[in-house]
Length: 215
Ligand code: AMP
Image (cartoon, rainbow, N blue to C red; front, side, top):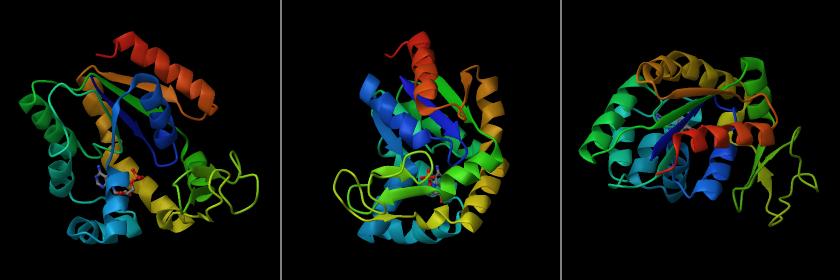
């Protein structure tokens, strides 16, 4: 099964993906996480991607498609988070899956008003040691600035600053939102209101995945 979560930055894609992965055993592919790991390693790919991430722009399609092509195996059960992000990437993914004898089964669009997306992004904090995600409004740590799990220092992602958050949202509207129409045309699209609390969103997602049937 191939499932995709689409949503504005801040819509809870990462959080909900983790829950779906533990519930259904998907192999999780988050292109943003891949880029951040490569940047931390200072690899050639990381060096190519760094400027784009810092400024909130999209990494060019050919680089992204090549990375994903190298990770998709025949017969796998995948959940994509943050990919595809453009219609060209969606076409690239269709080709990759076609070669592997499969296709996209389900795309869920997590919908969220822009003001709420900005509020969520700018209040997000990440543990610099273990990567656990917090939110100063909806999920504060027990002790300010420290991870509940490993006591690592909590930091703001560089691209979660207000100016870059707004830029990322504009990029989403311009380049990623057209995917909703693309996948509606392919008749695989479902929508979930991401402004609801995380447990309600999770239940709605699980009902959709169960309806399609994980295979
Ligand atoms: P994310 O963690 O999904 O919010 O992604 C963070 C950043 O990584 C984005 O703002 C882009 O710069 C880059 N990125 C992640 N996934 C993609 C993608 N599929 N296409 C282009 N750029 C991406």
